[in-house]
Image (cartoon, rainbow, N blue to C red; front, side, top):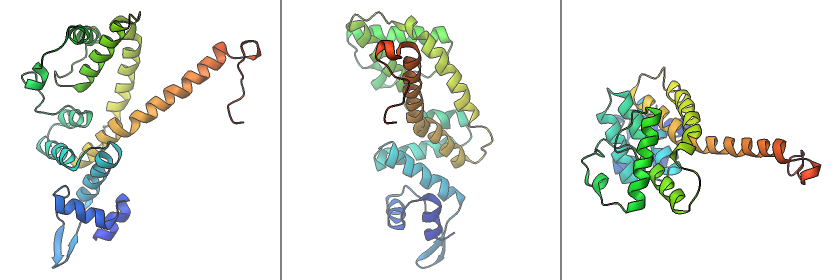
Length: 226
């Protein structure tokens, strides 16, 4: 396909496609003339990845290129491709200096609690998964506030998350092409996450209306704005 068709297929304007080509984010097409080239399905998938990582996830061009290069390097390992989409970089290992930075006492306690939750769930996760550190920070903050929610209190949520992850991983089935796999992984990890939060907010309002609503409690069964 010509660059104009590539733009129509991906929703990316031609000048921006040419900008990505100059930056090395998108590899050149097959030259057909001095100023013309043909592009294939791999360009479609890679360009959609670039659009998602830069335009939606908000990554820089350099970080996006790093992720795309890492995905290409792990072309025979779908687990690694999925991990990269989750933000687990292949270089972020247990021996990495970032993972060994000094922690304050609350942070260390939060990390220990996070590891206990992970162990209780029997999850197989890498030491460099940033979600584990996010969980540790939340647990440390809860402890600092004197909240009565510890890692055990998060287990019901963890079990629900485990079931959601089953659905996420199932979404990866059927894709064989590397860039198609990577695109699917990024869609599942990046684009669906806000939708999951939105679904939770909608369900929370509905449950609250049914449990606490009604004329006697000042609630209303009529949706706002109707």
